[in-house]
Amino acid sequence: PGNRLSRFLMPFFQKLWDMEFADLDNMNPFRIIIDRSNCAQMGAPDYFDVITKPMNLAWIKDKLKKGQYELKGFFDDVELMIKNCLDYNSDPNNDYH
Picture 1: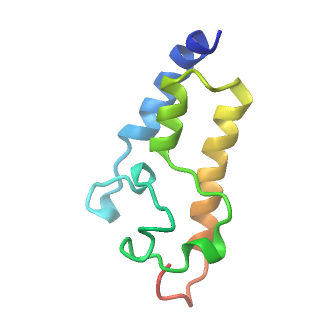
Picture 2 (picture 1 turned 135 degrees about the vertical axis):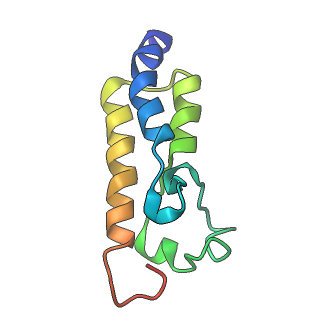
């Protein structure tokens, strides 16, 4: 069942993966893994002061390939990824955001 669901979800995922943002030199920041070991190098030294549960498309892709999703879980992870982006980047007074 997990593999059938993964095949069903893959076109939705692929649209997210293929997105490129003109304001960011046509890159997709959601593909980038930010963890405690690289957040400063990525220009986000305070990332884990703001975000308690990181999520990105690379991790979603891995879970899809392993058939680890229930339908709601996939959309929960996508929502978390977007929520993290909005939460982290919402403070215009923070130089890192």
